[in-house]
Image 1 (cartoon, helix red, strand yellow):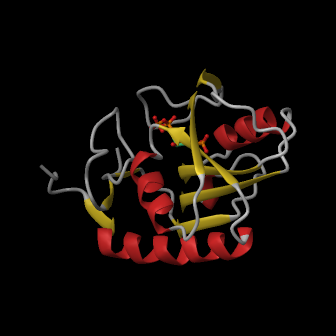
Image 2 (cartoon, rainbow, N blue to C red; image 1 turned 90 degrees about the vertical axis):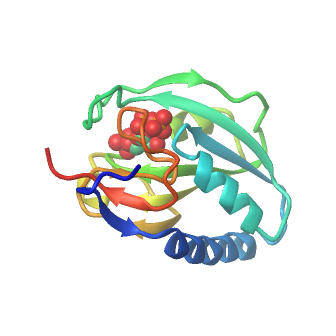
Length: 175
Ligand code: PRP
């Protein structure tokens, strides 16, 4: 199932250990205050499922979906909200959960949208942070791993909608 030329970057064990560390930081920062977790579909699905089970307190979970990539490896730079929140976040602490922050454009767009709804706070938790590709200044409050400028798949991350179900994270060979 895994092509020979995929390079293993992070094993499920490494991811699992890092998630427990992240969850401990988040739990300590919020001190059990009510928290709305907002997952950004679809890439967040595996990471979000693991992180909410590692947190030491209860949260509510909502989802949004923002389109930006299409079927290529490059961001189009144009974001559109495909699926919006189903709840009012006014006055609530919000934690956005992303699989990866690349150019930062999706996150910037989403944070601006959410800030218009007057939440108490907005923070970001991303499994992967591709700082080298950043085009806009966004703060990622919690992240699992820094990644180089390679295209990554697995553990929820796709290439053209494939490979989301891989347990580990791999780098695709350069084009
Ligand atoms: C990916 C990822 C982020 C975004 C990051 O989503 O999940 O939402 O791209 O890229 P950026 O920092 O350059 O904006 P994608 O659009 O591939 O959709 P998916 O989550 O459904 O895979």
